[in-house]
Length: 203
Image (cartoon, rainbow, N blue to C red; front, side, top):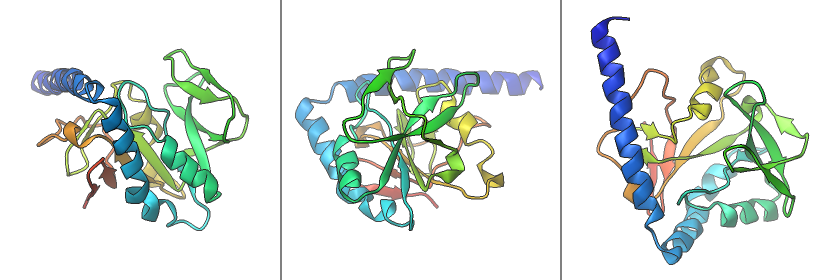
């Protein structure tokens, strides 16, 4: 790698770190009522995308740090008998497994403090129909800023070679939208982004 390429990568990473800090503060500043309305609005926005598959298996996330809660959406899926999965940290690699989550099932915090199902019913990423990813920032072209751990990027890095590619949809508050997200070579792209105000279809 050339020095200029190294410098460019370092600049992008630093820019994303700064943006990540600013956007996390912004979403944490939202009121409880704003968060409640955002969580409710997602249900109607995502209904058409959840039922597109004949056997829908939807990966969600457990909201932390000001992320939009998916609890109302989970309840809708349970009513419709749509299988819900939550990410589980791989024990040996910086990647994710996805474990089935049932209503009321006890969860155990991983070492990041994020609740995970304890069931042994896990699936490979390509067995999912849709994956809802929590975003820190996004642009309308599908660029995304995550929390910085790279778990989703590594998990879906080889998706083009899989027998089935799940639809990757980012979830964020509208206030987390940016003009353009500085991209790094390993950043995965999204098929769409849903916010508390609208659904962005990525071309």
